[in-house]
Length: 257
Image (tube, rainbow, N blue to C red; front, side, top):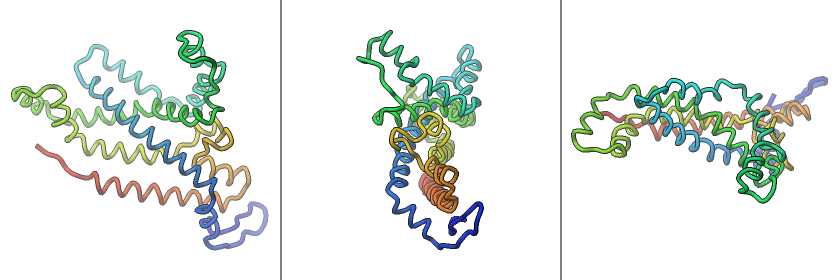
């Protein structure tokens, strides 16, 4: 299909690599890819850092920690569609966020159109991505933390290591395989961002929040250029595969004590 001018109703024609050439020279598609990369550069570190802090805190003997874990994991099992509609309301010009920032705290001079302003729309979608993914990343980290022997921390305490030194010298090195797995999965997920963009902004305003999958969807199902849409999908798949292999190769360093 990606090598064809594909038609739902008529005769499809083989056109070789023209769809791929078109995609790689399409400034709008390249802009959508840029937005996808920006989304990943913000949401992946954001999820990993915040989830690490939460996981370390909830790994301790804390009263009610099972409840806290459940609350942090709740966004993960909530539908992306539901979450996107909720945040679309929160970020609305007359929504709850503006009410808190403007009417209650007086931190902004007036209501902001978060999702229709080119300077804040993509950032708003990034916030949703980070919030939605913290719980999943936290659970993976908790699994990695559970595999680290407590004897190592006991020995470190005897040697006079403080909490930060234990985290830096024991926790992080021994979590490297877990961190590698999380990083690869989150990068793949960031390239696949779609529902939040499609529901919250539809790629607007004026295409400023368009990402690779919304661009592919638009051409494949709105314009019925299925061959072009398929070519975009394969380009994205190839990029994800290459990035994943590079990450795995350079981060696969075993650490043992």
